[in-house]
Image (cartoon, rainbow, N blue to C red):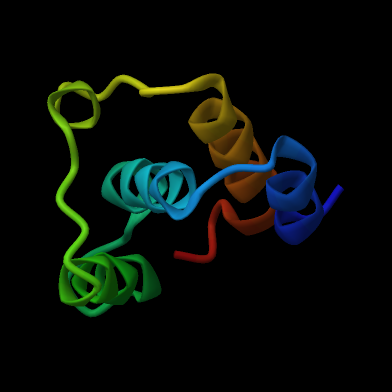
Length: 79
């Protein structure tokens, strides 16, 4: 299942998606000039501010965890 299909199935909101993206990029980006680092900058531009759970490296919802798993399956090694 793709990321978009997973997002639609979970009826998630953008905070679930942004949280999953944030944790994925923080955990897997490969440096300051990487794709993951650019995504983190875009999340900042979108005024996303991670909650305390995410700052502590924990998921805030089951939807975030499932979206993170999908990101990991599809994009690990490419951020």
